[in-house]
Image (cartoon, rainbow, N blue to C red; front, side):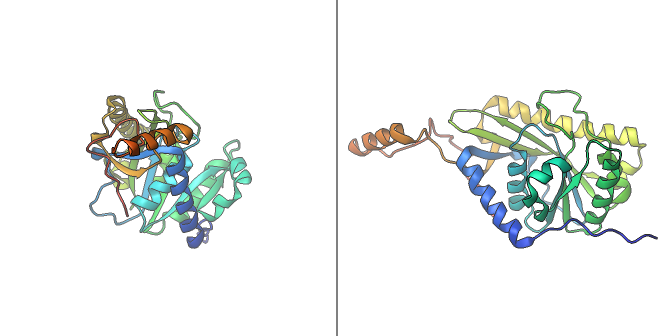
Length: 271
């Protein structure tokens, strides 16, 4: 048997530093990162490696998923494939658990599966995949997941697959809102009972259903349907908010920087 390749390089101290950096970055530039109350990650038994596969709607996904990994799965080591050309530009991500995949050559699938095999060999790891392999609007159907995600059940039969829906929208504040929702877990053993094409279709159907349900909540614009994982800076800022703050002080009112109160559901989850 050939020796199993080592997993991609990952620096624990650098991960902690950069996850804190992205935490502040998201707070500064987005109004909130919210998780659907029905779509929180399962709180039950998490033995075995995890494969979290998501849609890929925006540039923000890298920052959003790093914050989600640090806050929702702090006990696990996180890894993710990144297009090799992009990783050349953002080399620091190599030390955060990213590994290159050449999307424009036949070697890409072999690269991906080799690295994934090494990562998923340990039960305390999670592999995050933007499974569309490209930026795509949340309304695009079918999602068109890359077939490599269906192969992972064969190399990690003890793994659990979690669909993750990601969406962004503007509500009532200057900054955008980021939304997440996890679907029901899919054991790799159940997926292995299906032929590869049906396995891929099962994974895509689960993610599509999760994304459709999340989109309905986003359209409803009801913050009470979400738990706020991270709250950003509210208000317009600058001279305008300075004048409002002064006016509130002169009239004895409490200054509220936001356009309106979110009411219940604005509580922030901390870990």
